[in-house]
Length: 136
Image (cartoon, rainbow, N blue to C red; front, side, top):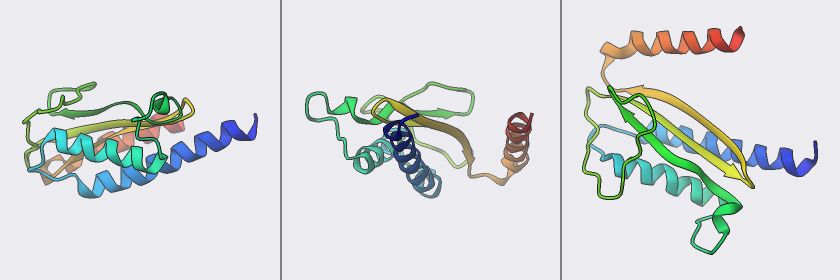
């Protein structure tokens, strides 16, 4: 493997780590899905240094795919369009999925957040299942 290949992945991973930590701390009930998606995507653009405004810039780095913000019964692949008025509620379960790319090298992950303690057992079970799958 060449150094550029690994360097691109490391940069994408570091951007993803920083944005994921920011999102996990800052996503709160009362925000619109559009606000949440824009916060994640603007952070990715800022940290990769590729805002996508110049022709072809998006090819070098930035958002790998539209941010997925999936609430309750919506399992995956829901991205709010501009102007979406849907608001995150205290009792919602939200699955967040976003990706970062640097020169086409994609790093992504998804996680679930809740704000109601009644879902603590659900989150623990999901974490255990994920760790079991990785271990196996």
